[in-house]
Image (cartoon, rainbow, N blue to C red; front, side, top):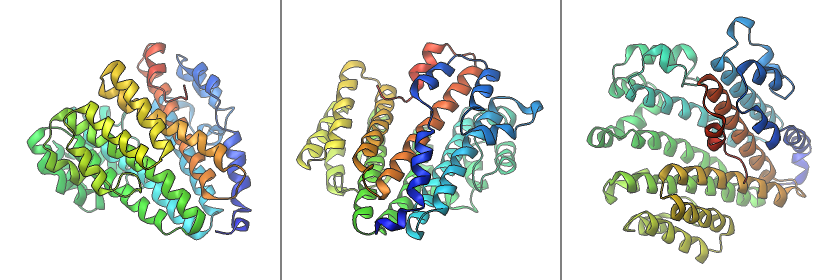
Length: 361
């Protein structure tokens, strides 16, 4: 794509990147009461959304909603400045918020929370607004009911196909990954329509994100001892590094360590340096803790580090790399703020909240 098409977009993204919350300021918020978090965020780009919260609604839910609205507004503003093909991709990326909402509904239903309790953990987004989410929670007794309520949407159809796995294992993860697989598939289709350097960069960045999800699936299903022939249906074999054959070979690995070793070998053979960085960290973490939660945090932190490298790599050029890297950094900022807000509400020890933050180490 010609660089001139970015003349409106790049200044917008560069300014937004400079306004991201610094790591030290993020850590400073940990352990603060909600009123201090509120006042500190009023000094940031979140001011507009937070100022719309009425004094009677100053709570964790309203703060989380404001943080989400800010992210959506940021993406929409960037999309309006973008050429049509990039605008389509950014619109697909926003669908991740709807899938997060679907997954939260499923988790709270499995946990047996009532409607009011559940809404503390559900962040309405897109077509799943607060009214719709509350309707689903109040009128569904179990996961099957939730799927029925979503039958008029694309998510209902996707979940219906994954219900058998849930019924047999009692594990909700197959349902979660089914909607992720659907949305990431749509994101990938939009990325493939980009031409030239933009297409190459988008497929590299998004391919790594999708493959991070594939690794998560492999590890989760390995821990749950789900049969190998079923794992494949939840993978998205799209990247040039972990295609269908490479992922199928990895499925045959005998245990978690062998799985990571096989993935690392494939990344090395493909000279995929960002993959090697991520998987090397994953192996170190596994050998140190042998904990699935630690491995998933390492995957998230690896994506954050990759985005920071992408910013340095693509700053001198006008292309989509800088845009996608910025959106990933903004995404992790949102996740960290929501973790801090939730920690404040639940009076979580500061040390524990810091452990849950996804920050560059």
